[in-house]
Length: 200
Image: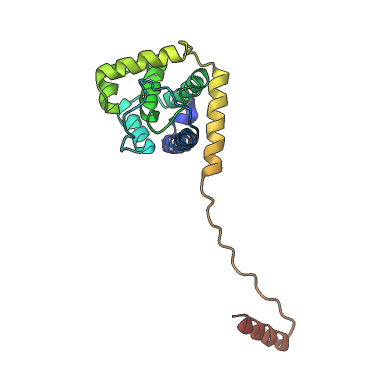
């Protein structure tokens, strides 16, 4: 999609995706603490929360993976599919980073003509090659190998992201000059000045 090639779009997309994933993982962390039911542990779960923020991690992936911008939209589609197919494995702060690196890598392999190998993505993601291989395999099985994203699906997800990105943009402050006071005579002007002084 040509819009994704615009240099200003990717930083906004990464910022929004990271914000979205941050909210989802925090919400699921809270839900997990509130409910007493035990959650299944998967290969995506880390022993502790990674010290790097989701936004910094996504920026790192974008900087070093050199995959097409469309890969990030497709990775988002894959994450959505994965969570729907694997409801016992919600995105949380212990697994979001591994799910991200895996979904971007799989989308790059599926979409792009040229992509890096698993060892490279493992270095970018800060994990071992063996773990990257295992994550990829588990992710593919979790998706049911459903990797095809139709143009309509891509457009729907991208439109949603684009709409949300525009809604989250800070509104610029517009300075409105004060309206001039219209007076009919000097007596009325002095009365208005007195009123303004009293108000202060």
